[in-house]
Amino acid sequence: MTTLIIATRNAHKLEEIRAILSNRFRLLSLRDFQEARPVIEDQPTFLKNAAKKARELAKWLQYQPDMELRIPGASASVLADDSGLEVDALGGAPGVHSARFAALDHTDPAAAGNASDLENNAKLLRLLKDVPLEKRTARFHCVLSLIRVKPSEPTLAGHLFEGTCEGIIQFTPTGHGGFGYDPLFVPRGHQRSFAELGDDVKNKISHRAQALLKMEKGLESLILG
Image (cartoon, rainbow, N blue to C red; front, top):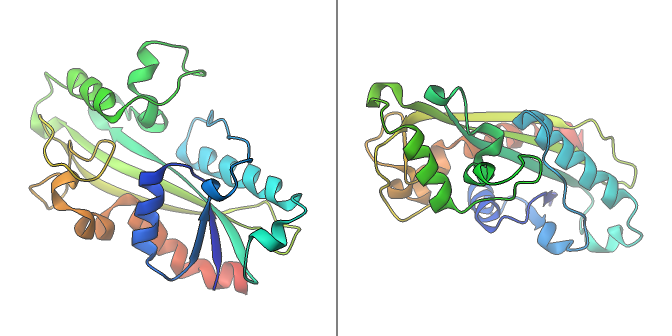
């Protein structure tokens, strides 16, 4: 079984990836490598942030003397995800700043930490308060970077996979599921938000689900071929 080391400590993101991939892979995460240094996500695009996170974790793993013991199986890869919300009326914001959107109001962007979902959603609604429904178009965008890390000399040129989910930002949050901007985002072809639709629906149509499907289709030739 192929092992994927997911380059995240975000419990919501990890559980979503686990649910989408089901039991087809052995999954580890940064929670299994607590001593790994955090990667500063300072790149201007999802693609560059995902590539940076995958590359730096792969480099770090390469020089761990006990890596062969800590990562079971004959085949292992780092999988890094960078994703967020792009709102057309805001010129694509919050984009790569999605997780720290509200925190940018209080500190230097380079030093801003993540804000709470409640704060980020409140800021988004405030900025869109005078925007009519037909102009509240948006999309979730996900980029995955996959780098093989076993044997012990990985090629650090990652393979990239993208997924998007189009929709609109509604005027008030609805639903209690999901995380992030899910209570505000209504995917195209649906009348309810991601937070209302539930995991079974979201994990079939989301930006992350689409990117992971592309990764699965190309995985065998990329890391086993």
